[in-house]
Length: 206
Ligand SMILES: [Zn+2]
Image 1 (cartoon, rainbow, N blue to C red):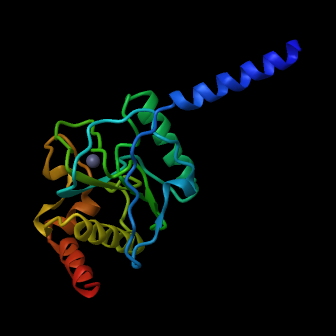
Image 2 (image 1 turned 90 degrees about the horizontal axis):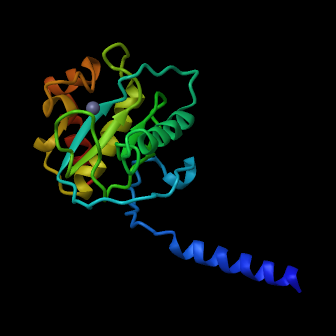
């Protein structure tokens, strides 16, 4: 009898815990055929433990990780570590970026797009879709596959959220205290070739 009571109590506690776990709304995007994205559920993203005020995307801003990334490192392990650090050390709701691109050009979903990102510098990223290339492009070189993936995800986001080409920029364009996204990415913004490639992608996929 005692054992039955303990089991019933245990079940009741489990049910009430389940109910008290708050669910935060997560916008799931439907990607265009030309963009291959590793969904949050496919790399082991942990559900949000807290939310913040939601915002609509009207800009796209490119970042690099700022830390050298080499081919012997596991990108998914690194994304998971960034998630843990962001939540535990920075008290952010999640990874500061909405998308991350690894050395092989794989694109990973990170923070849900309905929540503004976070930054260590002084600009306000509310309304910005944040796309990060893993690595340090002051010292590394952006490969063709990485650039192709970056063009595809940015073109998709520009179309999905009606972001004008003039609002596709880099972190450095908003903050004087950062080198982000590094000179080997920034050069494609200085000569406007990156935004031209996005425009071409949008024209061919219309
Ligand atoms: Zn940045």
